[in-house]
Length: 274
Image (cartoon, rainbow, N blue to C red; front, side, top):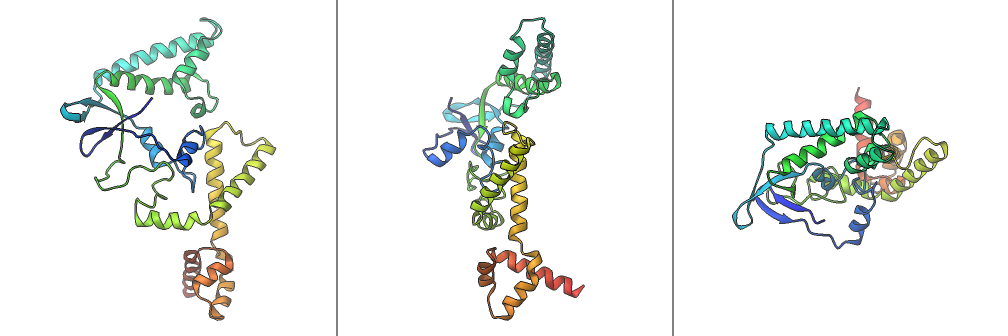
């Protein structure tokens, strides 16, 4: 199903174009990795937008407006959600047949996000969200914003590959972070493979758990930053500086970024003055 987009600045309906990039298609087809930034553990701008759909009402000439969530729609959603949850409780108790609970779970819940949680409380969280949007959508059409909150009309579209902190089109700081971490993407992937291997062998990291994927990416990123930052090599850097090497040459010699060398020098000078 093609998603319907909504431009909050121009108040117009747009079509979410299907990408022709094999790289993006491959990423979006992975049920676990599609939402993660390529360079860290954070979620991409695109996946963040998908988690917050809107309800819009069509106007003339392709225009539209956002429909607010009314108290009556919220009350109706709560009432229906209570009925579904009650039916689920009965199904778990075996009162409604052998497969009713599984059918309800498959209808309202995402198995990846639920992480194997089949409790009534977890089921209620999913049901309330789904039914709330169902009731809300009765007053309009479901759409997804084509921009991040607070963006102007010249800002880049939400990235399917990077988070806000690594999208080079988002800001100068993000561009520097992208350039800094992009150089070590091979090392980052190697660290993730090593953590997965250790976790799978020990049985501590289930591959079906989305939180395990987030943990592996976060831990690999932390280790990578420790490897990149030559905190313990201040004396080595001083020796190379004494030999007349520039910061760029030192970074190349130590296999780290020039910014990391500069930061290490500043830290060392700061400690020396304390």
